[in-house]
Structure formats: structure tokens, C-alpha cells
Image (spheres, rainbow, N blue to C red):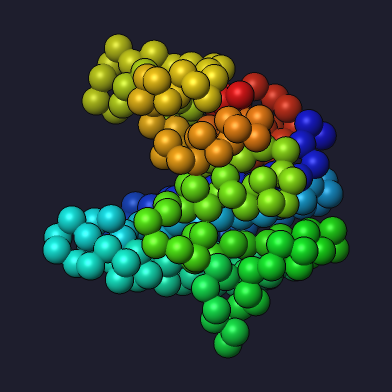
Amino acid sequence: MKYNRILLKLSGEALMGELKGGIDPDVVQMIAEQVKAIRELNVDVGLVIGGGNIFRGVAGATKGMDRVTADHMGMLATMINALALQDALEHNHVQTRVLSGMEMPRISENYIRRRAVRHLEKGRVVIFGSGTGNPYFSTDTAAALRANEINAEVVMKATNVDGVYSSDPKKDPNAIKFDRVSHQECLEKGLQVMDAAAIALCMDNKLPILVFNMMKPGNLIAAVMGEVVGTLVS
């Protein structure tokens, strides 16, 4: 194994599949099967998931909603996704715990760093819901924060493209794919890897970010094994 403990970042939109919103059970099942495959290799897995398939706090704020209220709604959306993924993983016989940055004792444990690390040591997949638990911070920033807190060796950002490009490859046929790029270059060139706060947090703590296409079966396990997949930000 190249990595023994990872933080996997999933966007909420990834759960939609071909739907226009909500959760596609087939996609959730596919993700659960890939996570199970790397757990069977004894890789510790922490997971942060967005809520954009249900509600995006920033989008609500741009339409006149109070930003704090909108962000709280977005955090609740991440918990819906976290519970869906937990259910899929446990149907695949993978022990899973959801830890929330906001208190929701009826449906999850509260996030405590030592508790999260202990769950990982016991072989459980830990899903971090509610982002950081604070408004104005994205789930990208939550992924960088939680990765550092649990001493993950890499943040793996799963997308529907095969890496980082100089521009949107779906709109620009001349877009150039990077195999490797530095955190500083991402900030200077405005590359859409993660938001600036997340990249800066990873850069300050020398934490690499691997951007890859998780929709391609086998990519996650290949990345964990150290094969060349996607773009490495380091």
C-alpha cells in the first residue's frame, strides 16, 4: 500500500448519477463497493461528503437567504448523504460510523477527534457529516481539516473527471491535464482543485491532494496502491 490512512472527499453531486437531484441508489452502491475493496486491504478510511445534490448553502445565500441559515441547511443535507452512504456500506458488511460536526445524538455521534481515530483503529469507516460544523466553511475545507486531525496521509478528492486541467475540459478542447502540480500553483493559477482555504490548509501541513475520477471502477483501489491515477497536488 502507498497509503494506509486516507480521507476521501465526495461531492454531493456525485451521488446524483444521471438524476437531476437527490440520491441514485446505484451510485451509492458503487461507491460503497469501492470503499469496501480498500477496507479489505486494511486501509483506514475517513470520508467527507458534500450536500450539493440536496442543497447548497452558497446558492441559497446568493438568492437572498441569510448565509448562516443557508449553511446550516447545507450541513443538514450532508447528513442525509452521510446516512445514505452509511446504510450502503453496512449492507456491504462494512462497519461504519457517522460523526457530526453539529449535535445530532438521535442519528449520529458527535465529532470528537480521539473518538474518530479510535473508530479508524478498530477498522471502521468514519463518515464526517455537517462539514466543519460552522457556517462559511465548505466541505472541501472540512475534508482538509479532518484529514489533518486524523493524520491521514492524503486527501483523495473524487470527481467525474480524470484529474486537474488548465481549464474545464468539457468546454475547452485545448485544456491541458496536469499529472502533478504544487499547492502554490493551484492557488496562483486558480485551478479548481478545492477552495483556497482547503488548499492552503493542506499546503501548510504538507498534505498531498489526489484528484481522480472515482466513477471509473477500480480507480480508488489503484490510487491507494500507488498507481498513477489522476493528478497529485503536493
